[in-house]
Image (tube, rainbow, N blue to C red; front, side, top):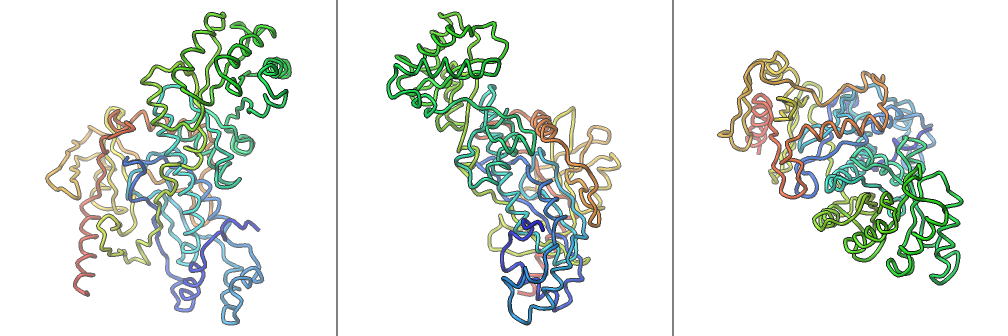
Amino acid sequence: MNQIPFCSDMYQYTMSKTFMDSGLDRKEAIFNLLFRNAPDKNNWAVVSGTRDAVAVALALGGAPPSFFARFLPQAHYETFREYLSSIRFTGSIWAMEEGEIAFPNQPVMIIKAPLIQAQLLETPLLCILNHQMAVATKASRVSRSTSKPVSEFGSRRAHGPWAAEHGAKAAYIGGCANSSNILSHINYDVPCSGTMAHSYVTAFGPVPAFERDAFTTYIKSHYGEPLVLLIDTYDTLRSGIRNAIAAFKECGIDDGYRNMYGIRLDSGDLAYLSITCRRLLDEAGLSKCKIIASNALDEYLIADLERQNAAVDFYGVGDAIATSKHNPCFGNVYKLVQIGEQPLLKRTEEKGKLINPGFQRTYRIIQEGEFKADVTCLVGDTLSRSIEAGKSILLCDESDPSKQTPYPAGSYSYSILQKLMVDQGVSKESDPSTDQKRRYYLSNLAQLNPTERRIINPHFHKVDISDDLYQLKLNLLHDIQRQL
């Protein structure tokens, strides 16, 4: 029995019992999983985890009544426990591919299923998507702050082994070049890399005199592999870099070495130290020796090092990515938007929390290889039919109708962001490789306007809803208001 679908909240089950008692369990429901705001005052996020979420949905069920009796022990739950023991996911799921660039209020996942099945998936799906999208989006920001490769090695700071493994996968999809996490390599084929720790150097002796022996021993032990020496254990310039150069020369490592070799800086003034080390390495004839920088880095510190022309070839980033340090809680929500044929709307005092009702799809408008606008439509509505027929369309800003953009017939192409991944309980597509997901993200990133890719104060992508969806939302709001 796969227990991950049961990583849930108690109220999902108490609500569902009442659904069964009232006959609502036989109603088909549509839930949208979406976010209202992107992290770091940006307006987009990187999708990761939808394939894991689909796998969890398909694994729903399989537990005996005794399992449910452990948290629903009362006698009046007996029939419900029997119901739960036989439940399987028989619905359909549309979702964005991992590596997709998503904007607020667009459905990242759409679950259409009998009400209880869809309701019970809320917590595990949010758990997966909120974690992975936080990490993937942060990895995107960090990797966009430099043209140099970024390695993720935050497993020791991650919120548990599962988070470390899946977070490393999400970081790779979001633009990191590799990860130190072994399980992400074994289970997701994420390239794996590693250097050495300070404990390795100090294990050879308590003073700098032993550092060179530590380096030469390591080189001899790993000859033929990538070789990176950590040089700040005692003193970067007076000991580390000098012992590293001596060890490389003693072991015959030079610019003719067939693999990568380098040094790592993990403390101090990284700009000054990297520039000085680069000079010393070049003077020693080791011009191809790479310099890796780490030490609590994030996108802002890396961008600052780049502005100072730091002589860094690779960056290593830990907790900033693994925990999405500045925004550790991603804001995906899971909202019921339709029951049977009736679209639904939750009215709220906060305008930003107002969701879009009904069965939806999002269309991305593309011109000359660039993403121009996204518009979410009701399935089969007037605008969606016009887009699919290639007709002239006019997109209007929901919050400011004076902002209008025409797209003449023949001037654009489109893609539908939510793909059918499960049809009536049956998986429709094979899971792409992690490398394919990463390349899909990089392709999407390249099609965003450069002003929308900025780390600070980016331009906001045009994101709208169709007139039919807007009118439906307005009508439901008026109906609620009249009742009130």
